[in-house]
Image (cartoon, rainbow, N blue to C red; front, side):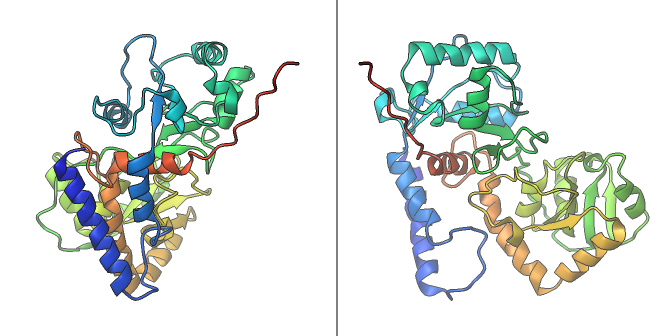
Length: 348
């Protein structure tokens, strides 16, 4: 770990200590556990160890966020990786995105037969990357992988392929372009390809309070249009929600339109999503505008500020930085490090 990284960690920890000891006890926070996350984060950096199985052949991932996570984890000087499996709290099973289910089952069968670690917990202290997630299969090896091991998938994960409280979703890559104009002019903003072929788009396209458009020609314009709106609209299930981290960063409160509970929100173990985003039942424009109107004013300003604070966790860096996407994902893995280790029955 570089001196710069250590300095930044100390700075973050000092700031957190000051805020928690000098602020009012009931100030809103974007964190589920505001008094414990930073001390726990420090403990994670000091003690968390992962053993990585060697893949049979080199491979790449299809998703940029998957590639960044894998590349960062496997850096030569990674503080999280150990070559001693007995020291590891978790085991990483790497395989390419396009590997068939039959080949994945064969891979798990090899781990079961050749090494002792899988059998100790039936895979409960193992994790893997699969952008689209793995479905339920009849093969014993795939069943244990799906039910027991931690899946890291891309957000949003297809319905039925994410198990809450066990699995983790990767936040999408966000633009690094910052807006120059932050004047709020619209109640809501939606990019057309987010809500393609959506009834909501058709109903809002003529409403002067909303900016509905196709993908802007450049990222600077995109950032400024987000910053010029109070709410950024995302339709969960059929729409593109990849810009949710950018909305938080640029002060546009995400308004997520959905017809079912969302279980795969990024960093759901860390962030209090109800404090940084609005969730609207899919009941048409009237319901959407009523919910947004109730959230305007002081409530909106608080959510906006908390969202900007939370957005630090959505930043991907080629060189990892404290509390960025990579480290927050590692923190979620660290929270899952306690698993039941089944006692191996000795033969008579």
